[in-house]
Structure formats: structure tokens, C-alpha cells
Amino acid sequence: MVDLVDWTAVRAAGPKVFVGYSDVTVLHEALAVRAGFATLHGPMTAAGTFLADARTRESLRATLFAPESVRTLGLETARALVPGRARA
Image (cartoon, rainbow, N blue to C red; front, side, top):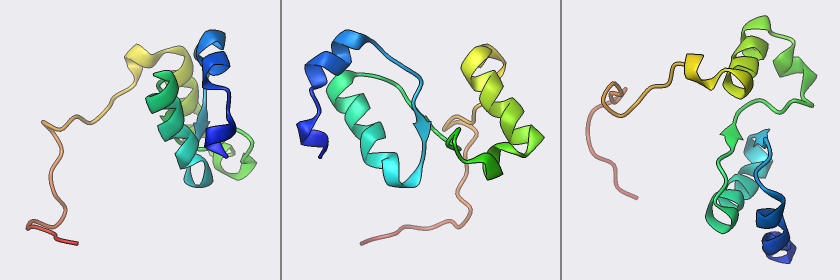
């Protein structure tokens, strides 16, 4: 269904806040690749059970309205939980 979206119109409308996970992962990828927009892989705002937690709610608020205050983990600080190599 992503191929049915009018991506020219999406790009022309400009970026919007898009937050979600799981079933909408394909939309995150499509918005990045086809429209050049950044999105947030996180709790869906309609999922009240996730946003009922004050810490989650505050983190999402800060990400949207004060992004300079949000701490992110970069590759320089990341480490493997289980060392080794994987092959599939």
C-alpha cells in the first residue's frame, strides 16, 4: 500500500511529527527514503497505556519540544551485550 501514497504531495506538505513502532515501521522507512523525513520510533500517542507512564510521557514531550535536552546514545558509547559475530 505504500506504493499507492502520493509521495510528491507528501514531500510538498512538508515534514510532520510521526511517532510509532511495530506495524508502522514500513511507514518510517518510506517517509525517510521517499520523502527525506525523520521520524520517531517510539510509543504511539494513541496508545494510552504507554503514555500513562510519566517518564515515557516526559521523554516524548522533550523529544518533540526540546530536542536539545534529550540524551541519545551514539555508536561511540554503544557496546555489544553479547560479544561475537552473527551470521544469517
